[in-house]
Image (cartoon, rainbow, N blue to C red; front, side, top):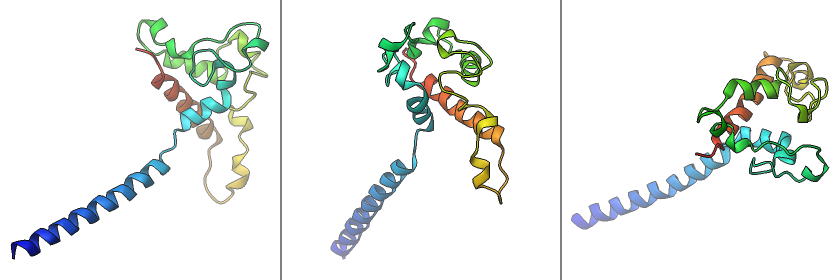
Length: 148
């Protein structure tokens, strides 16, 4: 009798372990780092994959890009959320990014330029919210890569 229970428990444990592996693999596939993707698409060329200002086109730039991993360190340990957001959305000038009409990344983070609405005619779509979510995901990523 004990053998039957032990065998049943062993089989149940193996099944649970097996399904746990599938769920974690599925979870990993579903978890996309949107902030990292935004960074790699818009910032890494100049600031480098690691955010330390070591981008692949640095030799073409007049001024070296900022090390984005030390923003909090340079601000007494506090990540300057509002300033970073304002730089990305164009409210704050950064000479290396160009004028606000044509910043280095174009108008990627402007709700005026978001054209996805034409693909979603039958569902509510807010272009401002879409642009803000892209900026917030990028700001979140920059916050996460800060050195201690």
